[in-house]
Length: 253
Image (cartoon, rainbow, N blue to C red):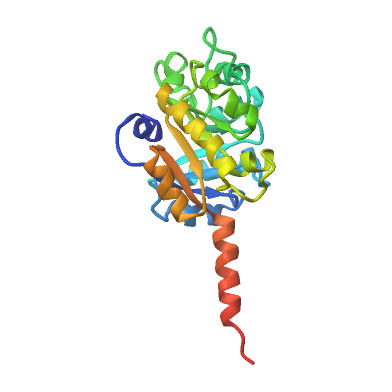
């Protein structure tokens, strides 16, 4: 079974994950996957990583404990189909603003007659045709996460969360801040108010919610608000920050 999905459905504290922008590098992926976090998200929206890179990381991930989430650049049914075929189970789709979008994404996760996903079991996701009942039961093992990151998405989030096939949601504070005229201020009161609306609606709908922050205090606040999964850092910021800190110590004159 999908461990990430099972964890979302079980009561307990928030899981902690790392955002991976270096998903195109298999060595960086292996270092990250072996670091002990609950999950690792491979970002295809703001990185050069593509389908071949995601496949390589999924193959590497088989030897490690963290669950793998993938965020494609956008919610294209063709892109979703290809990611599911290579064995992706947990997809985080950015920029979901309406229930109609969410409904289309949900349909993209299921084979007909329930959805519009192109049919094949001769894939890595289908264990090369060796999994009995794969076509009938494939959707049960998948997790669709919709990302709310605009004022429209926040306003429509109750309707979005009511769509069948939405397994979880994610509130994108950085884009939400920019869209509210507060770029670079994800903890501004205006942004917090919008986030709190999404958090409250997710709780009412029983939809597990996630977020990303590099601020430990904000991570604790979000955990206290009942979020189910929290990204606590990005590999590129950790790498660049460590290099900057090291450079400060390398002054010899």
